[in-house]
Amino acid sequence: MTRHPRKALIIGAGIAGPVAAMFLKRAGIEAEIYEAWPYSTGIGGGLQIAPNGMHVLAELGLADELIARGSIAESFDFYSQGGKRLGSLNRNMRERFGQPAVNMCRATLNETLVDKAWSSNVSVFFEKRLVKIEDRGDQPVIVYFADGTTAEGDFVIGADGVHSMVRRHVVPDGPMPFDTGLIGFGGFVPRAVIENLAIGQRVETTFGQSGFFGYGFCSSARDGGAMWWSTQPSHGMTAAAYRLQTQDAIKQHLRDFHSGWHDPIPAIIEAAENIVVTDTLDVATLPTWSRKRTLLIGDAAHATSPHAGQGASLALEDAMRLGALMRDGQELGLTFQNFEHERRPRTEKIVAIARRNGNSKRQFSPTGAWIRDHMLKLLLPLSSRGMDFMYAYNPRAT
Ligand SMILES: Cc1cc2nc3c(=O)[nH]c(=O)nc-3n(C[C@H](O)[C@H](O)[C@H](O)COP(=O)(O)OP(=O)(O)OC[C@H]3O[C@@H](n4cnc5c(N)ncnc54)[C@H](O)[C@@H]3O)c2cc1C
Image (cartoon, rainbow, N blue to C red; front, side, top):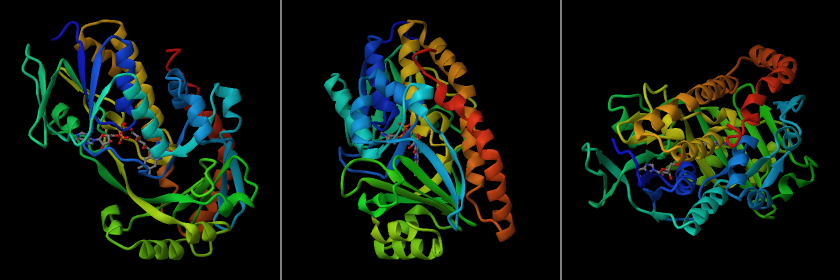
């Protein structure tokens, strides 16, 4: 195996890819990023970066910019379908964990990361869809792209997300993404739609008899400054099938599904445009995260359903810890083993929490929903403390 690797080929310019490239650069390793899609802006819905992820962005000098372009989330408040308050989580994050949780547009995050990678002299190549990896012992590793071109390097980092092609190279007969039976809808509405509610910097969320709805501010933009999302049982419908429908038909579906839910949910649905529909996927635990000179990070290694709000933060942590371990200058295979040894217990614990959280968004009987709501009232204060380990982690202090 290569003793002193100099050049990394990173597959995927989502969240883990550009950040890993920048931290590898700090470790003296040149990194090139290859992304399947063309360069574009404005893609995706909103997301929240938790304090643990914000620590990584702070290390790159990006926390202040993203706080300014996003919106600090001061708590997560929970309601019943009829609007009864059930409780609150994640208060005073900045005070307790050194960084706040920040809502932002996914596009803002991605564009900021790619720009920062560019300005750090990382080469990012778009429209390069990886199809194959060839690792021939002492020769450089070769990656093959769908357009017939290739690239060579000393090692490969698979930061290519939940549908990872690199994962297939690392674990050829390994698990594939599976549908968790829930489907996500989301997007942005003008700030004015929720401004009169005086929710301040709270993220408000509602458990229905079936499904879940959430909203909060995500930027100071008047037009798209509030984000919202709806999670519901998919009843066999895929995101792709919804995407074939018109926006009007999707909106009608949301109106019907959330009919009778408390205000301002109906008004948010009425104001919604460009609704994004996503499958809610999960991947079973992989037997290994690396094979020879190829390592998986982020969702490629430990895809998590979105119900813990941690996938992006874990991807950021992975990227930073990989850079730190590479700086130790150990043999590549050993570095990959150390990375997996360190990261696996934490990521698996959080993936399990996300799976559990997803279960409370499924279909309940009226009595079942009543019991769940009462249990939530009792359990929220306890589960709040049980989740602190996620946010308290600072990859710099590791
Ligand atoms: C609806 C939804 C809401 C979410 N909300 C949150 C949230 O609030 N907070 C949070 O922390 N997480 C959230 N997540 C999870 C989070 O989005 C992921 O965990 C995170 O994006 C993982 O980052 P990544 O870099 O590993 O993968 P990605 O961000 O998926 O990036 C992978 C990149 O690889 C590229 N790629 C794929 N295949 C190839 C190929 N063959 N060749 C080249 N490039 C390729 C893709 O185009 C993509 O750009 C949410 C997820 C969903 C679906």
